[in-house]
Length: 565
Ligand code: ADP
Ligand code: MG
Image: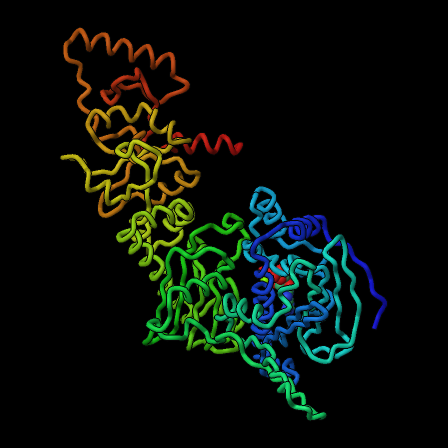
């Protein structure tokens, strides 16, 4: 045992704790979901590490999570015999160093009047939810495989600081004792805890156990030596891998609850696809499309959300090899029957089995999106407004699926009359005019700017639909996407429009005036433009700038200029 050492939380953690402690949050029970989920992660990690180092089990391979309470002391205790933490890990994970989501979560909560703490798990700071119900948290932990003298005790009242001591811990893993606040003492109750566990933690693949309630001795027994039965632990949750069960036996509620667990989300998903693939490569995938974007969707470092399992043994989180970047919003699990249990990140880097799984999974996701687009336009519109920008990256990233991805894109257009992106390339082709064999589009800084473009005049006159694009990624998108379904995509600002009618002047006098004007303009603008031409593409505006096929588009030039190039 060592003297307790006091450490301060980082400012961001302090702020987070303040918000948490003082919120009058109506759903305090989520603390249990978060702590059980951490315990389950810890068991997953141990099982994975033990594949290459069996000694970590210390002779006890049955991983489990336990929840206890003390009605008199008003405590709730959550313990696991998972991987545990050493001193550095405690400091790193729940101590001094703020995790990447801390700041984002504090900002989010700061703006959110209802202070909806549900979201906490998504920001990777779920542990601190313990302070919603606890005035003091005592965490005792020992990393698997280290001697019993390497235990660490972390204690905090959730104010500015915490203390650390080295203590003896005989059993590996982590134990968290919550000393309940006065207004949350109702959690020190068997029925209450059981119902919360069943509600949120049914799908945790490890048993979550509680003590079997003791039947009190019969009141009339005056037998002096009433024998108190030895405590018996019983499993409270279902503890089966949901994805391994047959589809027909899983309810929508179960799918949704499982999603909330793997997706660290509190809202139901938009859609899911559960498949058992048999044949040369065997695997099961359960993939979800979330309804909302995670806070780090645009972070370069953002986590991917698909977990890899091998025969139900967790291998790793956010396996990049399972989903391409442009589908980084997909959540779920993939369980392979073919990969060896002792796979390492290195092996995964180039593995044929994994490549096949990835290709199949990408197809599933794209198929799921196509189905949604066909069967439920409203849902698809929701998907598009949340993740459409990310999906666009796929056009350049995934050559093999380009056509399919392009079919999923949605644009605003001159036909729509507003800035809703709901026109597909297929729609645009279906509305082509006689003799039109290209799809036209305009890229500008905003919807309004696109609509005001003089380049649209000729198209309006001819009743031709033009797609209107203004998202940051669009310039790049359209440089990748030059054709769809056999039709060329063409910028409406390009010069060589097959639409341009003859520019022949109607009378010799008119021609003379025209030529004279063109000459004067050419001279005056000789440094600025390549050429000056007469065109009938304009209806109301006197002149406009156009670029030729080879040149950079006007919008791209502007973007580069902005970027200081
Ligand atoms: P997240 O679970 O999203 O990583 P948390 O705030 O819930 O965020 O937990 C922070 C970190 O603390 C975890 O990533 C893990 O490293 C560590 N941790 C929390 N609980 C346990 C536990 N029971 N056993 C081992 N490590 C834990
Ligand atoms: Mg967690």
